[in-house]
Each structure stands twice: as structure tokens, then as C-alpha cells.
Image (tube, rainbow, N blue to C red):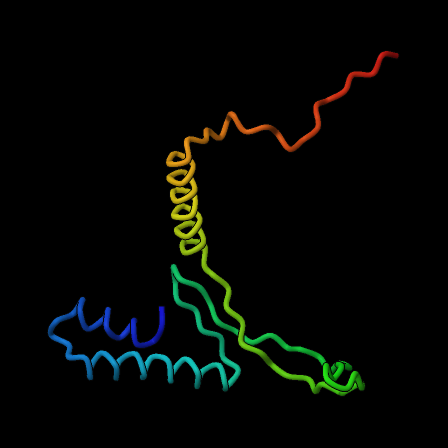
Amino acid sequence: MTKSELIAKLAAHFPQLGAADAELAVKMILDAMGKSLSHGERIEIRGFGSFGLNFRPPRVGRNPKSGEKVQVPAKYVPHFKAGKELRERVDLKHAEEQGTRQSQQGVVASAAPSALPAPTTSAS
């Protein structure tokens, strides 16, 4: 989903908001999140996930064109960690889609051959 799709969906879900109001709301939320991260603060949205910063130490990289070594400075990069509720919702949705695909193909999960080798018995 893109930012413009989010704005359109928000405007459609709340008809009392015009498209300009929905756009302003999304812009304000994203700006506030960006400002918080730039100040080194952590953002937590219950049931969705958290945004934080990860430190990347300085390292030696390579210029892909010339192959020469280049010093890459230390930096902080944004990091998102999905919350438990979001992970479960995504996993459930993915499992439902997999089940639908398998039933459409006529494949039964229990009939699939096992990827593990058959157990061997030792005669001692």
C-alpha cells in the first residue's frame, strides 16, 4: 500500500473527511514519526509494531565500479519490528491463502511426501 492509497482508503472509510483532510492527517502522522526517530526516540504502536534505530558501525566497503576500498561511516538506520498481533494476523492470512491454493490444486498436505529421510533401525 502506498501513501496515496492509504489517503484514499482513509477518505473512503471516513466520508466526513475530505481527501485534503485525510492527506493532512497522514502527512502529520508520518512527519511526527519521522521527527521522533530523528531525535532518537522509539515509536510503539500497540498491536502493530515498533520503530526504532539500529546502529551500524563504521566498516570498509568496496566501490562496485572500480573495486577500490571505501570507508563507510557509522550511522543509525530505522528499524521496524512487527508486534505479536500483527505477526499472528499476517501468519493466519498467509496460512489461509496457502490452504486455499492447495485445495484449488487438489493437493492434500498429508499426502505430500516427507522431506525427512525414513528412520533406520540398527541391528546390534
